[in-house]
Amino acid sequence: MTRCFRWFALGILTAAALGAPGVGSTASAQEFLNGIEWKEPAVVRPGENGGPPSDAVVLFDGKDLSAWEGSTQWKVVEGAMVSGKGDLRTKAAFGDCQLHIEWAAPTPATGNGQGRGNSGVFLMNTYEIQVLDSFENKTYFDGQAGAIYKQTPPAVNATRPPGTWNVYDIIWTAPRFAADGSLKSPAYITALHNGVLILNHFALKGDTPFNRPPQYKAHPDRLPIRLQDHGNPMRFRNIWIRETPPVEGKQVREPFLRDGKGVETPVK
Ligand code: MG
Image (cartoon, rainbow, N blue to C red):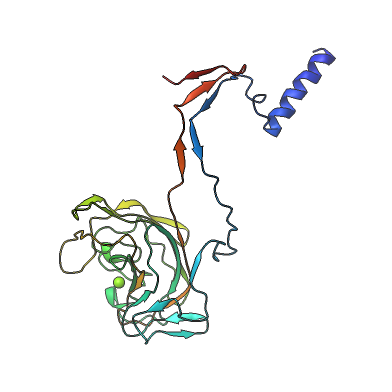
């Protein structure tokens, strides 16, 4: 290898390591461009240790229940909200969203099956992802913690013991309805339980009652989040939500290829 060639090779490698456009990809000088003009993604400061990112709406930060209504029997005790008689729901309404919520079942555990540490997170006031003390507590699988109630079990049971904190991170896509009230597209849910995937883009079959099959009934684009009172003193903390509008982009021209000399050709 001549000295000159060595320097040339080193230059190529350095440029590739730095990600210089057009140089690292010497094998192909051709670039694909999709012709879409994207809106610049907003800058969001991530939260620390499960805390809210900078663009989140904080629904409960350990201090008060000012974001909630529907029951006066829920209390704030030592930084957690404790369920009382009657369901609690957010004053604000939400559609597509990312929801973070932490919950703990009573300790020592009492009761069994559905009678032990039962609550529920109702997306859009209608669709329940089950909250239940499913730590060494068997019940019907499509009713255990992380189930979409009466529709599907969670993929796995990642429940922590009663008295310790469980975390749900939920990605929700609201159902869409046509003007005549018919269903255009179902609701979808993806959820992590304590960081473990339990629901992966599951398409809901409708609402989640105990006593009849699920069904869809047209409703507004945004509705409150509701927390269920099922007679057990459940604790909740660190609840925040982010609205998740679709990424915006405009197709300003057809997709094309550009070679190293700047010559453009349409994609066939
Ligand atoms: Mg429930």
